[in-house]
Image (cartoon, rainbow, N blue to C red):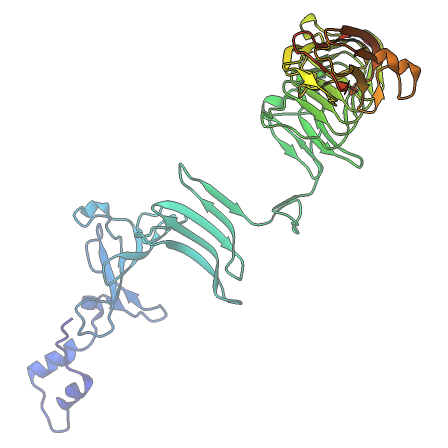
Length: 496
């Protein structure tokens, strides 16, 4: 800015003793002062200094320019009234007080009337409106007591707002980020009903814990679901923990409390390490394995395998679509239907007969595939004619799937002339079927052939427990042929 005015020292020289100032000098003296009428600055006695703006009252009015030095071309800061949104449109002015910088950009605006404040904008839309120019940080609160950390900050990323709350150590505790396809919400420890949270979410307090409505109710000991659970009976759709256990209440159909239902979808499997006690029906679409006691007080229906490694107690009907294995006691007070293999290694208490479908009869028929000579224990039968139930194992032995009465037959033909050859029907590797070693009844499980061409057979009916093993031992020095030598067995009657 160009200032063509005399300074005080120069003006004093015009009025030294004996000088007669000229008209020009008097004019310069007058111009060096401030004229209230022409310069728009007035100081009335008893009132503050007044400054009148420059410009049309209907448009932009400049009030004050602040320079570092008058030789600068532009002021560092300017104060004006009624700035315009678009300089090309004089009618776009906003009534209010505005402070702008050397670039002409508004930095602070206070709107007349409502008092709305704009930072970076002359069009505030709320009590405080902040408009950035692609700056990351828009608003921050600094804690001066520690590390000048931004304990509160509003930022933006590609036009999406972010609100952050930090600790005095500048650790982000809360972050809210608004984005249509990637909204993020970060919290540290949150307390509901407590100001000393011990976990990411701590809830302390009570509320509605009985009758479901549209809202979800969470207390320090229960969760009551709302939404589609609204209008259900008391305890419908609820999880609660008390002094003794964790309780899960199924969702009811309407207000009928007897219709509570829970569906668990677990295609990869579900594990329960403690006892299972079902007070109502238990339906499982896959396999069920219980490593401890399992008790069902009504019906049990399993579409997959059942393996109970301890006791299995059913108050109602037991239906097994595939294999059933119980390694200890089985108790069923209703009917029992097993459509595949059934193995019970302990006592069985069944008040009604066990139903085994015709297509699941336990039976096998095997034969020698090659001639066998000399002692063989166990004797291997390479030709399996059929094995209903799959209980003849490794071409050598049969495993009883259930307690019951079984029938076995052995038939062999001597085909050499160099000594006797015989078969023994062995039980669990050491004893004989229907007798122990040294017991005369053991002979009822033997057969022997002494000369070539001699044929012999033996039929044995015996009682077996679930899991008993039966195999054939060949003794003697002679041999037999594979055309006429075989071993068969069948379950006659399952027993409880």
